Image (tube, rainbow, N blue to C red; front, top):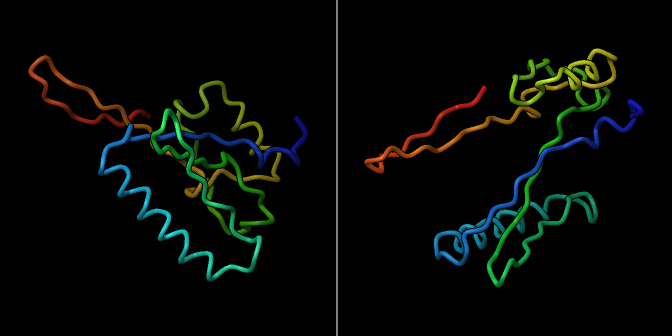
Length: 127
């Protein structure tokens, strides 16, 4: 892969509430927030907010880039990759080439919700 393409690498997640009222309310609130931002950006400068349907239920996808071009964030401090994000060191090698940085804005935390036999649940951070 050419270094000029590195900033296209991203990770994403798609969420749905399968029709729950709480999720539908969150979708409506998110759209209202997006609408406020559209008034502040010139036409075509803000990526469109998209919500899709899955079997009649609202869903949306969000994503984050692994790397940012240094020219776009010259003062961004590097945030080390975690084992969960870069187990083979491939992203670390890409950053070492010097044209991209993995900063706090690129970092994503991974959490797992676990439930005991007594149905007590808790979240665990995965490094």
